[in-house]
Image (cartoon, rainbow, N blue to C red; front, side, top):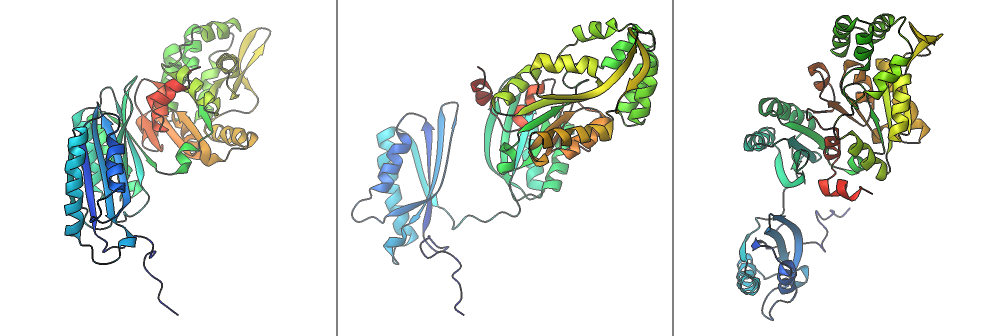
Length: 418
């Protein structure tokens, strides 16, 4: 059996002369076109070239364009690296004079090495993102064998965020190393695998208390029953994973016995949405997402909230009301930690969306099953116990920072505004 070639004979091989052409200077129309026109139309005595790789970025009006070229396969043998470099340097002088930029030529060092493992996006978010945070992230990436291939800005408002494309690093090691950097610098750092799955998300589930809205509804109700301190202690223990959520919920609801039903309307009217909540929902809806809430709170609060926000679905517990007063009990199935995960799965199935294409956002221990069931689970201003176990964590005060974790730029968010 004949030995299979290691590369396509129609492609430049590992010994084909290659060079890197780097253009830098003030950006203006026609720079890129001028360079490639020159590459496409060499002098009679110059070798024809093929484009192997291109990267271009403009930072505050300054252009950096890198092009790797190789001697065309049609040239055959006989063209050396020196021949290629001499030709490209003459060409570079002409282009630089024509469009007033710097053009440098150097050997490309052979074919680009293939990095181990799948590449990842590393997203840095902060107000602001300090140089120390960028340096720490870069050092952490290098420490686990990763290489930064590209950097782009995602947003400058309400948070500053940058996306680094990283190759050569194993996912768990990368997340572990960058979690240390995030804790030290106070910057949020999220890690996601590069691929179609990132942009294929189609459904998002939000927790309500301390996620979609500020504060805890049960605490507000308890304050009207004169039991605020007692219930707040139980709530904190439950959210930190120190108490079984279902049992803690029953204990907290029991102190509400005798409250008039009207207090539910009062609490609902005083709800304050987390900054960025409307932007997040509006943007994702215009991008075709199904959006909803799954809460350990109460349908008397969450159903009207879901209706006012135009959400697609909602699930929560229901307080029992008899003769216009709360009985201190619940009716129906309790939406606890496993119940939240079941609700996510149910809504995903209802809309025909695979779980790997779902996103869940929450802050408490009772959200963990839901966060880990979703394709992407985001701990939002969460307890340490939750941050350590979720896929990624956000500690910014703005809920629409979730959009940057999903890879959307500020311009894309603005484009989604009707």
